[in-house]
Image (cartoon, rainbow, N blue to C red; front, side, top):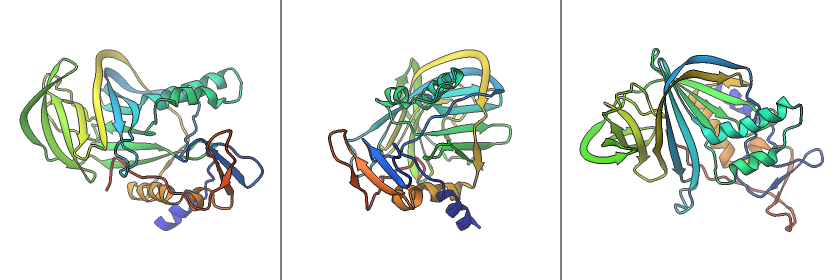
Length: 297
C-alpha cells in the first residue's frame, strides 16, 4: 500500500521554471527544486499568541560543499496551546501572491524572485500541540500549479538532554548549553532559564527555558534568535490544499525526488536546462539534487 502511495504522488507533474510546447520543460538559472507560491486567504484563528521569537537560519544544502550555505528566516509564535514555527520568507512570497489575487491579476513571479534573491526557504512548518503532545509537519511539494502541501503528524519524542555550565548571551538573555540527539543528528541547544516558556522550538523541547539557538554538531543547520517580543494577537492559519501521509512515506518521497527528479517528477517530458539567457538550452539526460534534510532518520 505504501509503495502505491509513493507511485501515485510521483505522478504529479513538476513545472520547475517554465514550459514551452506540450511535453517540453525548460529549467532556467538553477537546477535546484523550485517551489511556487500560493495566495494565502481564508484565514481562521487557532489560538492566541503571547510571544514571538525570530530566528536567523543558515544551512548547508550539499554536504560535499561545506563552504556553500543558504539563508532563511524563521518565526516562532507561542500560544496557550499551540506553537507555530514557520518560514517568514516563504510567508512573504505567498503574501505577494495574495495581493495579485486580490486585484484579479495573474500571479507574477518576478516579485517572488526579488524576495527570494538572498534567501533559500526550507519550505516546512512545524505546529506543536502541547495538549495532545504532538507535532504536525507541513511541507510544500515542489510541484505545480496547483500548489500542494503534504502533512504528517507524530507524537512528541522525549529528548534526553545533557546540561552543561557553559554560558553565552543571546539577545540579552543568559543562556546555558545542552546536548541531545534527535532525527539522526546530535544537537547543541542554548536555552534561557529567564524565559520559562513551555514551547518547543522546531522539535526541540523539554529544557528548563526557551531555546534561543541550536545547531547540529556537523554544522549543517544553525538557528539563532535575533529578536523576542511579547504580544496578544490571534494565531492565524490559512486553508491550503493539504494531503496527509505518514512521516516514513514523506521521507521516502522527498528522497526519491532529489535522487532522480527527471523520472520521479518529469517522467514523460523532455527537459532542457538553460543556465542564462545568453547560453543555449541543453537537454538533461541525468539530474541529481543534493539532499541534506534536517532530519536524517
